[in-house]
Figure: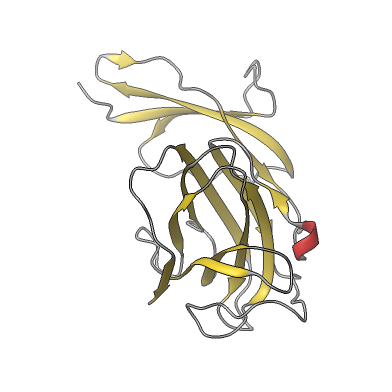
Length: 212
């Protein structure tokens, strides 16, 4: 039968020899307490029910960083099928050429940047779930100063008010720039960005612009 709970392991080593977190009672989302230190981590889960627990999943990675991607040129690289990052955007700034976000009609505030080059045709799902402030999310192609919008979303995150998500078709070899911003000048805080990539296009997904 199906899983009714999950066991979780988090470690700074892919071997999971001495997990930093081992919790056998996960029923939904999970927030480490106390918070993890800055760094790169691995995590995996196994499904459990009254009959016991199944095998461990493949390991995924995430990083917890200080503010490292304030400017476009300092964007954090996204690679692999699953990616997560946490940043404190309290001290994030704006650049003079920050583009206007189509889904809010003006440039965002306290902007941070990520970049991704598609290894193959596929579909990207990116969201800001579990962030502590009202985010707007955008995906761009092109060069700084002449960026072209291919996706923009404000507050359509289904699981949490104030969060944003975009599902978008990517094309092999093309570089994409992901921007996260506060919707207003007083919107900043703990940012969580999650991205997952599936090879192959499930369907053609057009440019996304959502205003809520």
